[in-house]
Length: 422
Ligand SMILES: CSCCC(=O)C(=O)COP(=O)(O)O
Image 1: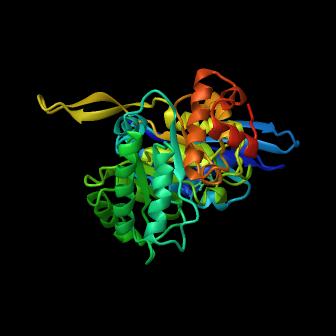
Image 2: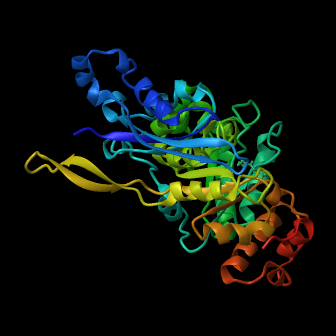
Image 3: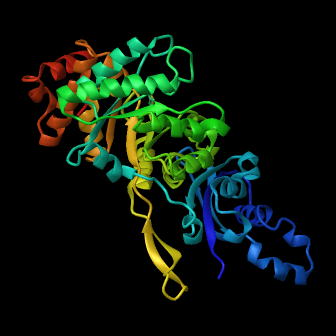
């Protein structure tokens, strides 16, 4: 029986016959010359022909005419990898007028080729031993041009503040002052030293950079030197690179996906790929254990409904049928598999006064993440981490931040500096 992956597009055009447009896509991105073929040839091409599932015409709030078009693509047309799927459903089409890829549905056979996140949200929690609250991540800031002792100092202060994860800045690449090998060594030493004081485990996501052909080797080396997490700029390398790293048997640490370049894809209503596909479905499918994306509250703002759609894509159960051999009769049997959940990490311009909003929208299934909001704290980096932990505790207890701050000086100072949005 044929199986299909389905793509939904929003296509803007004042005059187009959207039914014709949809048929053109279904044919053009699959068998190509359908209309010119003799009947016998048409019949033999049928299994490879895209199918128009739905065409729903409407107008937006500006009065512009559009249609949501759904096309099913036969799995037989493409190999089971993300590059092949994306080139099929949105390769040439991405350049053909005002059209945006809004959603993707993966067939079970396609999905069965992916293992998804190796750790996922629960795996990350288990590594840290924290299951009853949102996690807190801080970001190295002002690291370019600094040497190893300066980096170590910054790491140590962040760790003492009670954060669960520390990530490199995504713009920290291989450099003579703080090369990855040395960075991992000094930072993991600082993590150990801080743990003696805080009693808290910590993951350090070191930025994996350099030529694509060397990435796996670099990652394995980082892990062998003690790195316990990786940061990866997924969109500059491609989803399949993430999938390879995530599936690599010797890369035994969680991978945090950075959204750098995502703004070139999702913000326009007329072009690109929706945020929930780009930073939700595809990141999870490719194996990101944590996914960073702009929040609706901070300095780089994404509309709330898009944020919630990403959240849904990262967290919702996606049971899938798959075939495996039972080992007894050698026959394939249907089983049930679910991709592990990816931890949502709404980011950019986050400060403690925003924590109640983050928890309201994401519940406990979230990593609160901040760079400037930690290091820019009036009492310093360590106090910055504490202020966030206090804000999380207040929000979990249902206590207004200002009330909680009356007995917690770090939170009080953060609120004085940046205010509260509840
Ligand atoms: C746009 S999401 C990525 C956020 C990020 O990587 C970052 O460095 C944010 O830093 P901030 O000082 O704004 O917390």
